[in-house]
Image (cartoon, rainbow, N blue to C red; front, top):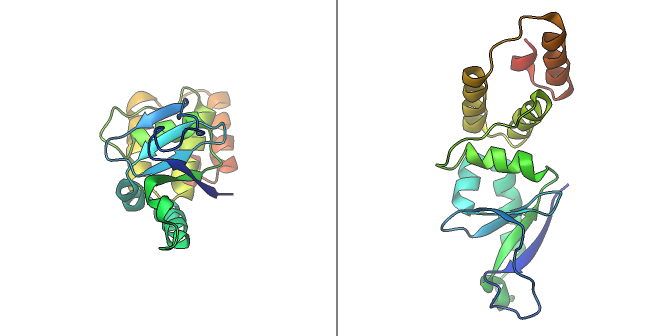
Length: 164
């Protein structure tokens, strides 16, 4: 599910490494890179990720622990954590944990996936903020078909509050 590699802290560190051309999120003070399933990059501070997701925090910490003191070059590189989610979902998720304008995906299916990912990574604060944004921007469906569609999506993604 997760793989971890390393990228140079800057493109100057190694002449053979390409710069991160697909950088979607570049937060100041970043010391970790998250990579989506579609190879988009998100530079983020490890502390913010650890404070918001114990699951991703454990993965990052295991990676750093595995480097040990012997790998002096490791201190020049940022850990890259490969996540199985799309760049759209990760980007939206990060907007709910960093002080930027929160973004919701455009479709009900993607919103349910976003909620599911936040739930999977145990991001309780992000879940609360996402649910609040959804409630503000989307009214409850009044017709049966859209309501059943949302219910089915909630069931598919294991989102009990949304299913109820």
